Image 1 (tube, rainbow, N blue to C red):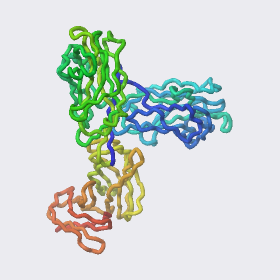
Image 2 (image 1 turned 180 degrees about the horizontal axis):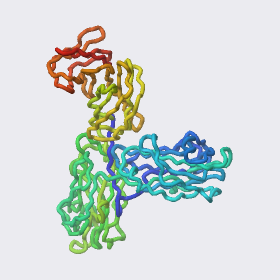
Image 3 (image 1 turned 135 degrees about the vertical axis):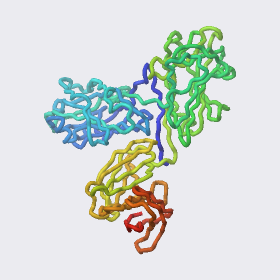
Image 4 (image 1 turned 90 degrees about the vertical axis):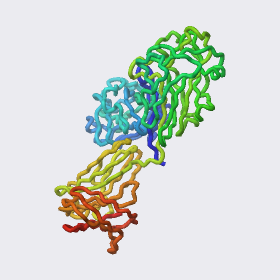
Length: 575
């Protein structure tokens, strides 16, 4: 099963919550491990691996990820020498990530390189961009516990905002005075379980959320203001036991007096919304976040519950939470995030899940008994949001609908179309003179994950003199490879041209015909023994024609032939 991943994330405070989304705590590390996996990973990111460039060597140093560095005079020399640490931030599916900060603890020895810079790449390591200016140590070489470096602000780098493809980070260092002694340059130390040696701060755009800025509070219902295309719009509503109340920037109600959760359920004292997957989407929920504001006589205790059977039976999520302070906080209080990832019922669901927020324990049913969701103070402050991952079943990494080529002024222009893509890093273009073996002649960057049609082109400026067989090799971000059908173009064509291809999901043979002459023609396919496999009459229009031949061919070399009153053209192709 191939999976198309999408995310739902809740990140809420005065703006969407900035938090560490990736981090390494190196407590207990020996320092000379070959690699180190992130110890904190946002559920919408892949686990990241910290590794070394080819130019540095492992070194033991407790609580760190350590290496000895060569002597390089400047950043250019360090890049050539491969003197760097590296990790990658890889969003899952279509998760949109925005980075805000980079924090690192470094500990270096007296002869180690004192100058460093962070760089990033968004094209799989082909090109890198500096992050700010180099930073040079002047003191602290004898600090065995390492020194917390100045926080690096990433929020102003457009490339690192709202991205959903992998970003590689490298830490280059140079200026050391010895390649043999006291030349350790280390990430760390982590002195306890709370001290991360390396951390990235950022946000992941919510997928389903309610921003209540501008709401009066007493609206009958409130639709989600942000909804992923793979989910239905969700409606926030009230149970029959609570009454609408005016309270700006909120969804507000007055609650009755109920002694406990059972009484609240009987009274219908709840808020409700539903997460409804579309089509064949499979949803795995991870967190639920909410801002609440309550008055002094309102119910201080609440619990979230869910139902998967249309509201017949509900299950508690965790234990009840009781307010003890904050009753006069007019802007509301961000409640502790509720972890849903350990609830098996809420993983890989394809049917609606109803959520209800029940509250009880209030002291008055007539005054100061407002229990509200909100407040949203800005256009980025969501009052309610839910997080998780959406997977699409039975979806190919790339749905290729067309792959053709055309001779153009001595060059061959390849063109292909995809209907959708999942984690598509890039295409390799392969060419052969006889259908095997193939050689990579170029690459074209993919569009990551998308459900929209994408058009691609590649110009082979130096085709082979006669037969040119082409194939696409699609490579995803995890290194998985999928090959396309093979097409054949003869570089000797000057007039009518033929290309043969088989679209993804269609066993039939398609013959693409470029002609200057409109009229009746016959297209046929024969095997290498001269036997006619299929023959079909057709009517050609001037220009491009796509002829579909309803035949399934076993793997072999065939000849496609077009005959008309004005010309006879043929081409070999590999099925």
